[in-house]
Length: 123
Image (cartoon, rainbow, N blue to C red; front, side, top):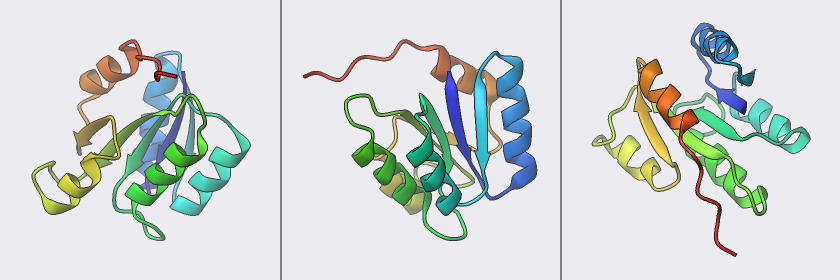
């Protein structure tokens, strides 16, 4: 699976990239929204792990852009955040994402999310 990681915490993003590569995924790190938008224009991703609190744009805007430009096969979108889903930031973003993981990320949960079969979008 080709995974886009978007997190301004470079160490956390790099560690996540390394862990995903150990599970035979390909991953690319972007440390702000602009890098993520540029990467998504150049490459198609199967999944995107997006921090909600980015320095230049909210992660929800990155998710909205990925959904609107993906065509028939949008990537699996996973919010990663220090906020809980019950917090207003998490609750507002929840509708844009397929899954929500609170930091620190439970890597077993992430592995299950990425391994689950995707239901194709209906035509």
